[in-house]
Amino acid sequence: MGGSNANNDVSSTFIIAYYNAARADMMQRLILRESMLTVFLVAVAALTSVAFSGGTSQRYAFFAIPILGFGVAASYVHHVAAVRALWTYLTTEYQQDVETLLGRLPLPRHFDISASHPEMASSRMIRLAGTLALIVVPQILATAAGAVTLGLNGPAVWAFTISIVAIAGTMVFLIYGYLSRSKRRQIAEQLRLLGRTRTTHNSAIP
Figure 1 (cartoon, rainbow, N blue to C red):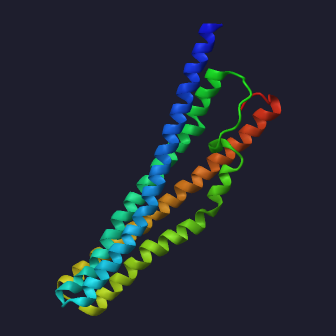
Figure 2: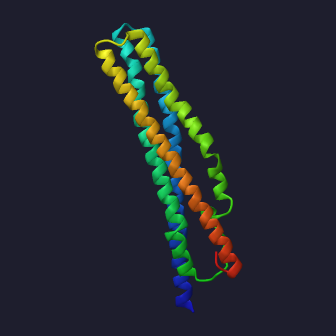
Figure 3: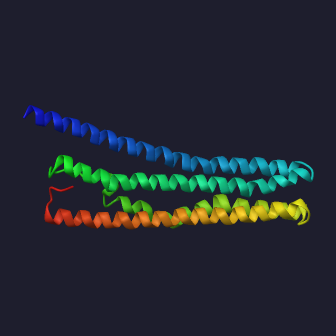
């Protein structure tokens, strides 16, 4: 009995440690993801100030905004994908390991596979619209301002073209992130329904 209890204690320690580590990584990435938007908007304000306060050469600062936005969007979606991978781990491999280690003990359902979790994904369209407004709109306005103040001739043509490509790339990244969230919600719904089925057949299985 003593050995069995010791093994259970060790298993419980690892279960808690792995869950806390995954959740901590998720939270850190979520904070970094949202912080990037704030940093981007501050950079937009600074570059706009430089562009308006200087001469013709400084007007090219407008075209730096779309390129910067492209980089922010790429990093933003990277964090979205990483969070999704961590969440998938918690809802599949981790959950299976918990059931294997603890057997049919009556356990509370953790948040990542709860019926409440899919509700967080219901606002994904609103989040997509907000992200587009915070990144793509400044890109478009900056590109337009650069084209108007410099004219489409000489180096400005190349800068304008690069800006348009950067805006298109940004939209592709953000839409990809949106589709990833949609798929994540579908998986969450499937897991929720699976959880209901398990509860129906054996209420002891989490």
